[in-house]
Image 1 (tube, rainbow, N blue to C red):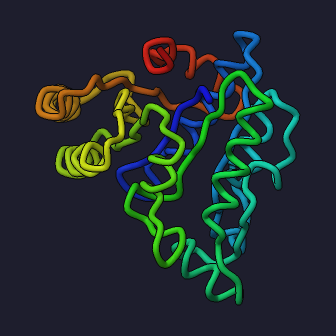
Image 2 (image 1 turned 90 degrees about the vertical axis):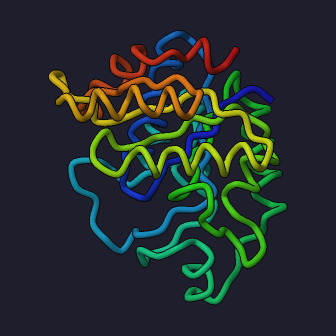
Length: 224
């Protein structure tokens, strides 16, 4: 399988936007791209400027997926996936996630898998998002904020990834401003130096400009 696993330092850091930008950019290069997100929560809240995650990813992937194909487990409350499943009276089958991701990858040139929240978010009572990333074995792209607090959050994520044998390919800080402040520039340089991992920036974008933004990322380097 060939692909990337996109995770975040926290929830709400722009992980889905980065994953969608990667999908859109690869599709613009005539790659057949599939997207996968093991679970989505928070569907009780109405979509705003951006569609719900699985809908956005399905719209930019080029492998002909429906939103339900992208995210096999879908829940209303904005809580951790394992708890959302518990509230719904069900559970997430980790082996099924592995099989569905592999099936999606088999139908595409590249699979872009987006996690849920950060690496240490539980999918089941005994499996973390990190376990799915390890099972797939893809290079890891870590999405982080550019502002205050990002150094610690990002370095901790890099450490947790490497402890599990994952291969961080790069960090993406987003939204990366056109005129970053001295503190944001320092944060980016510090994460790159202390984390021993290249750091890119994804500028503010909207659903119509995802491919343009994604083509500014070092996709070839990440995919090898």
